[in-house]
Structure formats: structure tokens, C-alpha cells
Length: 360
Image (cartoon, rainbow, N blue to C red; front, side, top):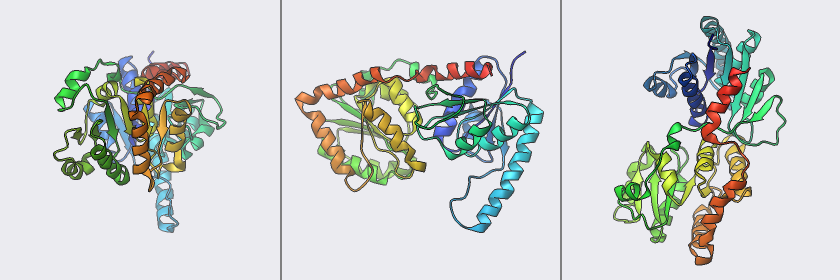
């Protein structure tokens, strides 16, 4: 008899996509899976596009403000979400409940535990999030995407699942020529994210203008595309895109990336063994993106640059150092350093995690 699985996933892409990859792997193995998501979560569009079943609950994150009305609203939604989740569990009758981070995980893990359902949590970051710390008190298995110094019971290092598309081949010449770029030139992929990317985007515009011997692919996000497209007018060493479904292909053909250091991005870099300059999102909870980035920097795979007043200066200095003939090996050594990073293969992570869940 097939075991049945529920996955609480959503909120940010870093919480949703690992759960999404696991859901697809479970379905591939013919196992029933149901997602639990926040009401009106944008992730619903992805689930519907892939014909993955889901149920919505009405919940919100813990308020950061001291406004008593927001806290009263939170308490009301908290108890409502527990009642909704209990009803969904009774109807679906899962054998295993999984949370992949974010506040949406807690109602499922908490209720499943007290209803006798096996529970598991996956946290992609090196600093465990508050919701997962709370969920950890009720879990039978705690899976880690990155090494952590925190003591977590029943924990195992699994890596963070990435999309199966990363296994596809990529042709550097056709991809770069298709973007109007020169395959013979060193190429940098820039992925800044749509939130809080103003300082990073401003610095990148300056880099593109000051470094004509490098060429760039800048995936801006819809929010910044219009402004940046205008800034890059008549510059021959830049291809600017609002979004790309082929980022997995770009990561395989470029020489380096400048990007944020969310856990899913790091898992993709690790799989592609791509040298990187990591610019942690400065407002990430508990500064977890910085601690994620330090894992790659300490291993010699990447550089970390803080987003502050010196971001442009520090990025320019790194490019100048990498430009020198003697440091031409730097990109090679950064790529080679991934061989010493003793982490599970992110492309195999979904398969391995499903094996662990089936054995709970």
C-alpha cells in the first residue's frame, strides 16, 4: 500500500521550491501527495501549472511590530489554522507530514505530531529559522540543506533539492550568441532578486560600464527591468533579461556569478561548481544569507561582498584581481575548490529525501 504525504511549503521561493521538488519526486514514484499552502500564496500558480494537489489555510507570520491588534489577529489566525489543518489531516490521512520552512510549516507539523502522523522538517539554511526551531520539537526527522553549528536532534545533512532541469546539457556558444554576446569573452551571470536590490543593481551598472573586457547577463526581475534596460542602452557587453526559465543553462556556461546567497541559489551553484561573488540580502532573518555565503567562501569557492556603501568599490576590486594574468587561475581554483566541499549532491537530494521519508 502506497504511503501518503503532506507538504507544508510556500512563502518565499527558498521555502517553496525544495518542497516543490520533493512533491514532484513523490508523484514520480506514484505516491499520493498534498500541499498545504497559505491562502492566496503565489506558489499556488506553480502547483496548479504542474497539477499538484493543494489545500489552503488562513495563517500569517508572527508580527514583528508591537501593535497589539496585529498580535491579536495573529492569535486568531493561529488557532483557526490549527483547526483547518486538523480537518485536512483527517480527510487526507497522511502517513508523513513534511515542512520545508517558514511559518506555514508549524500548523501541519504541530497537528500531525499530536495526531500520530510521522513528521519531518527540511531547513535549507545554515542558520535554522524560528519556525523550524519550533517544529523541531515535534519532528521525527530533521533534514539540513547546509551544515550548521546548531544542535538539532534527529538531524541528517541532505543538501537542498534543485530542479531536475539542472541535469540538462547546455551549449555555451548558442546560448551566448543568442543573447548577442561573444562566447570567447569571460561572462558573468548576475541575479539580484526583486527585493532590496537597488544598491546591488546600481553597482552592477557601474561594473558593466567600467569593465568592457567582461560581459554580463543580468536577470533583473520584472520590477527593475525597465530602469536597467534603459541604463544599459548601447552597451555591447550586456544582455539584460527580466526573467529566465533557462537559468540552469546559464549557470553551466558562464564563468562566474554575482548573486544573492539564499540556500536554493547556493545549492544550484554547488551543483554547477560555479565560482561566485555572493552579496547576501542584508535584511534576511538572522542574517542567514551571510552565514550561507561564508560556507562557500571558507571553502574557497566564492567571495562574499556585503551590500553597503563600499559594494561598488569592493566588486570592482575583485574583478580587477581576477582580470590579471596571474590570477586567471583564480576562477579555475574557485571551481576546483568545490571538489573539497563535502556536501551531498543537490540534484540527488529529492530522491534521497524521499527515501528517508518513505522509511519513517
